[in-house]
Amino acid sequence: MKLLLLSNSTIKGQPYLGWPQPYLKEFLKGVKNVVFVPYAGITISYDNYTESVVNALADFELKIKGVHTLDNAKEEILKSDCIMVGGGNTFSLLKKLQEEGLIEPVKNAVAKGSKYVGWSAGANMACPTIKTTNDMPVEQPKSFNAIGLIDFQINPHFTNATIPNHGGETREMRLQEYLVKNPESDVVGLPEGMLIEIDDEKTYLKGEGNAYLFRNNKETGVLNLGSITI
Image 1 (cartoon, helix red, strand yellow):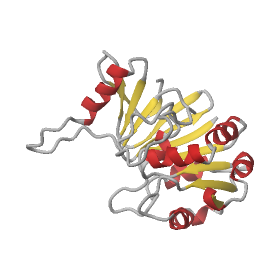
Image 2 (tube, one colour):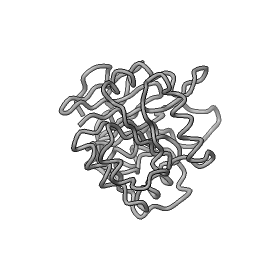
Image 3 (cartoon, one colour):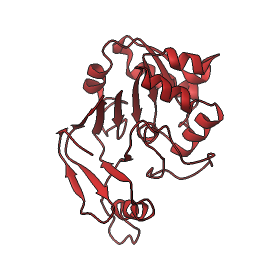
Image 4 (cartoon, one colour):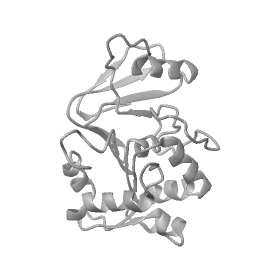
């Protein structure tokens, strides 16, 4: 199983999917046929979302098809070299995947060797559940169960920054609430500009900085770049 799970797509001052290009280029070696899932897009059409990814990865010589354009999406997913799942609203993404019956085809394709790339909501979708997304539930999926390619949770765009004179909870406080109700779970707080790569039995943290590991009733752990154990 080969996964590339990005916290985010864009860093201020850089082009769309600019910062992860070196990691994507290495990860996508040997890949030609890509199915892109634009279902997290709400303020952008599926066609325009797909086009933005095609343009961002124009130098990669990939054949990228939007899943919404396929006559037999389930079959095309199973035949693909790679499945890419873009960011946006995680609830809308999951709802549409459920409605189209694509959860199992994606899971089966990855199990058979297709690579998986997901950023933001797409990274959430690789987790057991979407309960650690930052997104507003603008739509209601049938359940919060995601694809479950990994056995831990990711919180993309993680930051514990606070706004002066703002009384709301920090991100860590919200994740601790999740862990009280889901004590068996592990959560990786993945800051922007960072990614997790799964290469079969090995897990790597890449990018710049550190990530954080949250577990119920345990001190927050710091994950350094390189091989990690979760």
